[in-house]
Every structure is written in C-alpha cells, then in structure tokens.
Amino acid sequence: MGTSFIVVICIFILDQTVKWWVVTHIPLHQAQPLVPGLVEWFHIQNTGAGWGLFAGQMLLFQLVTLAMVLYIGRLIYLNRYRTGTLHLTLGLLLGGTLGNFADRLRLGYVVDMFHLQFFDFPVFNIADAALTVGVIGLILLVLTNKEMDGFI
Image 1 (cartoon, rainbow, N blue to C red):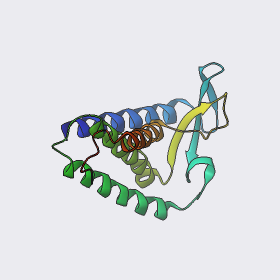
Image 2: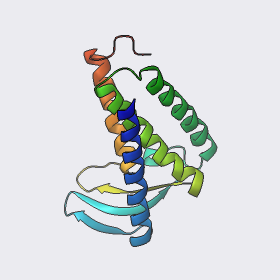
Image 3: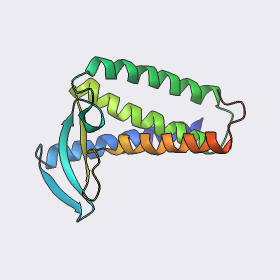
Image 4: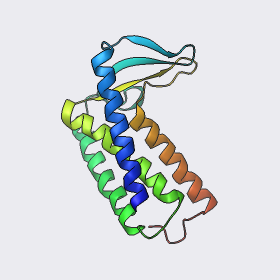
C-alpha cells in the first residue's frame, strides 16, 4: 500500500509542477521545441477528453473522476497486503486521476502540454501519461494473471 501512495504523490507533484511551469513560461496556444522533430511543448486548456471529446462537460468529468478516485482508493486498500507491480499500477492510475482532477476543480479545465510531432495524437500531460501506463500495466497483469489471484 505504501508503494501506491508514494507513486501517487510523485505523479501528482510532478504533474502539477510541470503544469505550473508551462502556464508561467509558455503562452497559451504557443509551441516551443522540447525534443526537435519528436515532441514539443504546446500549452492548451483542455475542457474535454482526448481529441476534444465531451468538451465542456465538466460536471460529467468531475463525477466520473470522483467515482474513479474512490474506486481506485478502495482497490489499493483491499489489496494493501499485496506487493509488486499491482501497487505501482494502481498508484499510476490514482496519481494521474488526481492530477487532472485538481485542474478541473481549480481551473475548470486541464492544462496539457506535450505534443507529439511524429504522430497524430492529442496534446497530453504527465497525468495522462501516468493513466495510460497504468491502464496498460493493469491490462498486462490481467492478461498474464500475474499477481491477480483474488484481485477485487
């Protein structure tokens, strides 16, 4: 259980720190190179999900996010005596969820900043990346049945 919360805290702090830096250093809708030809900083305010889906549906996002925070927190608690990758995965999921939830509550939108230049993909942030890696990790755990006996 400790591993999950360490991951949650690290993801949340890193996510919010990078978002603060972007807001204070990169004008809205402006790009700056990060790794030329691969990824650039691109400051946007996202009121929806990826690719602008459900834009402006803040109450929906807040309710779904609150439900996910409670559910993932419950999973961490119920599996508190387990060790290994499950706690890392759940920590990534909860940290990413809380990072974007903080933006939605505080700002009414999510700050996104990473734009892949080689692939048509939505601009994203660290919380989004943590969520993506967490979902992939959870899928792999379920598919390989590794650490999943008795998982609730």
